Length: 189
Image (cartoon, rainbow, N blue to C red):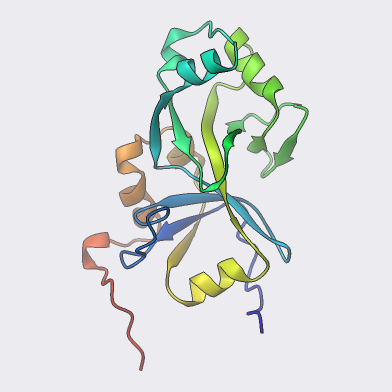
């Protein structure tokens, strides 16, 4: 029996509880880009890879006009389709394969957004990942019920402006929680 979907977590953060031991998700903050009765899709936003944007673009034969933008990290978005790129960005724009998450944030998986970024006329606020995190119907709700995740409404500043090293503590801060006071043990009354 699947738990009922309590709410739509689209445009929310999942913040890993300290007891989450999964190597893919322990200590992570995930931005949920889509959530329905069919499942959920999100991107880890605090797990940079060794690759930067300039190196990624070079791998797909694109040359970046703005060298400063090239230093942006490429993130491990999750364990699903790690050979594919996903670009979370604002403004939304009109790209070949985009999912509009909010009025001003979209998730694009087509190469045209990267071509525009390389040429200097793509979105300036972006987060690029390889792979994504996915959950089947009811799976995310089950994990939340088991206290694996806390949820918080997403904040675009945290997504696009906060340094990577501060994202986990800032996500806990959105909930008014100091992670030092959280226990990794789950209690039952």
